[in-house]
Image (spheres, one colour):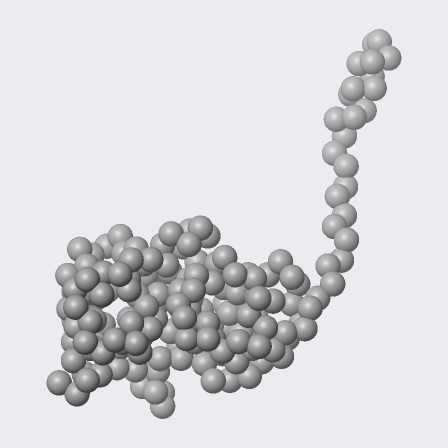
Length: 179
């Protein structure tokens, strides 16, 4: 066997890859009103922190590109896609997940209306839609169809035709303004 072929054969051996330890960064967040202090790797996404470290599994991972909105949470009151935000970027923030919409162990009004109006099928997109609805109604208690479309534009539902989702948001708006 020529020397070059033998050398090439040896280089085909797999090399063991050892990743260096990644230093953890201390963060403090308030999730659904509860304070947490944790040390996280800088590469950990907010959705991973919520699901894996805090066991808040209502926030879903759908696409990892911000397209679907299944990972939507409120960060300091604004809806964000938690699959594209690092947990360290949320240091000091107030985060609301779908679990935070409940009141005293009961479904919150938006959660209840979504169920009552059949605004879900498989339920995968529902937490993100509920949080987008919460943000909308926090700023606009009388949204029109155009406002609703804009508010949920970042949330994709592959099961429904959106009619019942619109209906649920309209009913939730009426309940918020007392009608």
